[in-house]
Image (cartoon, rainbow, N blue to C red; front, side, top):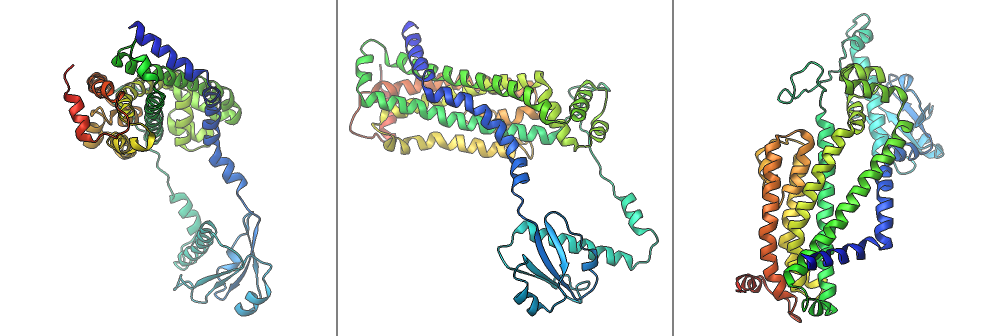
Length: 443
């Protein structure tokens, strides 16, 4: 154990003291928060200039009801189509509407003077559709039809409660959308970490093997101790980085969120958490979508966030230990990264497969596919962490963890057999058949 601890300390200190580690650890939380705010900022600043469109309406129905806004400005052309296309080149384009557009909605053409966009064309189609639908309804000659339609229009908001968790009246409603997107995000985090840190172990072994450092080290340390120390040392780096990111994200979020979110939204989210308001009432009071209110309330529930982060660490460490043993075995078998590509393909397949299954969890977290892939150790870290926010039974999580860590012990024993042979092999890339022979060697 003393030899393993020395290797762990060496691997940990070598990586933690690098400038790249410090910069990445500090910048990643800022990048995550920036990515969350990016869609709103892009939407706000990506709007171009107001597009002036000349309209030739031969039906006489549409143009009087087209309303200009900050994106599009409509104006009557007063010219024929040929004249307008030839003379009005300073406009964005010419919109021609046929005389029988009411019976033939496809009788509409846009002659653009520059590149058009899908958003613009869909917006124009929607405006014309609304005018034509209103005109068709008007012909039914029903008094106050517009008012009746406004009163009839109804939006249903479903509040979902987990009856298997609590049957109290003040139980908090759950949001499937928030749980699904949170699970997908966590699954992506596990997917990236398994690839990044697993490849880090493999590259470290290859570099030390090429420099012949391993030949000197194994004279004092058993190959198994060296491999375990390397795996656990890099695992400590991953855990420290995750914990620092969690602290920074929660800290920055706690400081930034109250300043970005309206005060009434924060107050109603707190009221919904305490049970003073239900979801519909709180959303109506804050004037926001219920899904947005659930997202804010979930982010403010630090107990829930802490539980999710704990599960994330458990599956991150378990998944890393399992895969890093295989990556270490591959790294010891080859002399360069190029030769490792073929051997690591079987390792990459379950990681990628787990990510795709995690995407399907958004549709049904309790499907048989999601269940079994969250139990099988090779895919369980990614798939199970994607299911946990949806609220699954504790026994499934416990079973998944037990199988994951038990598989790590078996995999380390198998990987050590390849490792102790591979670190002394040079100049030849072994085949899968040769790796199987190494596994059967007696020591």
